[in-house]
Image (tube, rainbow, N blue to C red; front, side):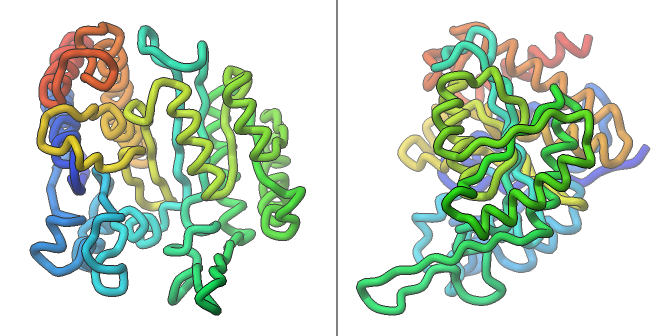
Length: 360
């Protein structure tokens, strides 16, 4: 049987706790279903800086590149003691660029029994991940932000035809597995050149999927529609910053960022990543909700299973997802942030137990 290698980076703050809870579930699935996964660990963020003077050494990136899949906990980028040019880089950004993880797929859905701000939501936001307004990833050298005078700050927005095309393909491929609807989101009425280019490429891609119903919505209207009629949307395709903002909004409406999965995927690599921050204020207190990185890891297992034609991995991802939802359905077995009584470790144990019953 083929064996796959997954490397886990715990990250900062609550990262080690929620990553440990997630890996507890993955290891249980690995054993019960004989998945053949080999899981290794390495440091990024503060732990890596203390050892190597760099939050994401090049050697660590090479380990990620050699692995079949990556799991990344949250990183406290704002808290790093030195700027990027001196070793305080954003590990997430370096991994996304270094592995060319151009598609950030972020599902938002209401879960039975879990309080939410909307009655029904089941959508995926396909967010372009490697360019846009993000200053740390849109230049070959230097930063996409600069100050020509002390009183003026400028930011460069990078939109390319190739990146617009491939995120549109990712969105359409996702829609073909779901309800066959794609919504293209932009601000092309104002950003006529950059969003105009994105829309040109996305429309062209969508025409090659005649089964898919396509509509176009401006980003400010989309923010309103996520509140008003979230059930009307299936796959939303957009650029980096718009996708970042809309996916956070959608996740909160569906129950909170702590429940939001996120997969960063490219043609050759994929990375499961928590959608939220490192929450240093509760780090080490066994209070953190591990569901975000758990759901993200389910997405990674599904991606690996499809890529390597290993249906057992897809089954494992689906069963873990089901187990998490079953545990969340009981108020007492939720984590504290959701009104429950369980700590991070105990929640992981509850998911393992529930997974075992589903396997049998």
